[in-house]
Length: 328
Image (cartoon, rainbow, N blue to C red; front, side, top):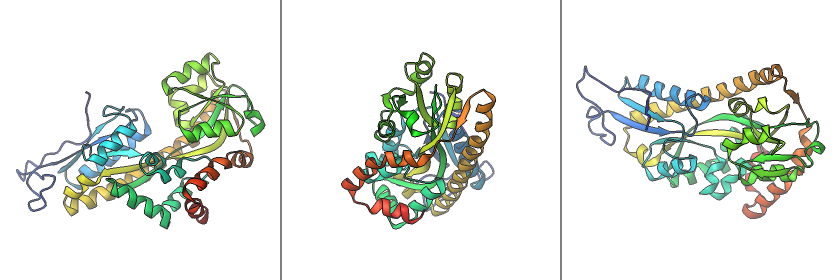
């Protein structure tokens, strides 16, 4: 297993180190924390996580370290979130909607066209509904330290999408996830669930006509080489929470909690800056590669997927959507 050591802890001058859980003598041993992430070392997520680790090391004068395990070394996002909940892993990333696997009403954060943008999503997490969600996550062992923007899903294809009518009959690769499947089906496309690693060849051979992902993912996987068009459908917004195990948190001295919380908030803001800047850059980059960018009217798309929100409301009530709409 390849370890990426972001910060090496050593307090040679003092000749003593901090220990996790030793609140009585904060000079006992180094506090060494582990953070697992799905993204690889070339990703923006890794860059932001590295900044987080560096800030923690700097503020603690190298008494607190965060070792990063990128590229799903410790499992997929679901496995790592479960490890964090159990206290086996200290830190990871997690999309708010992904917590719907354990707190079902959180799935509203994954549904298409629910949010107008990342700032809207953040405001929703600050409502009474959002605060209740954070409390329920905390009860299951997940403490949210910060939240960063992780891109908005757009639709690439081998034919132009100028309106929702152009979605009809499109064989659209989607992950095997409810929200993404619904986006394809309700807008008239044919949903084709497929592993992410198989998508490039499927696009190249016209096994599928298109796919949907944030622009940085389209770039990283070089889908622009085998797709002629990208429609800025903006249908699902991705966020990325900085999540610490509550079991780990409870063992940390207060001053360490404070510096980690401050560093996570700053890293999350940096995370957002990275993704927004990259998305703006990529529009021009894709155009330079010969990809045509279209801007279909999103209102018909939003109307088409309304049934999935209605289904959510029927299951959980309309408290969530009312809270979200109240901060538009």
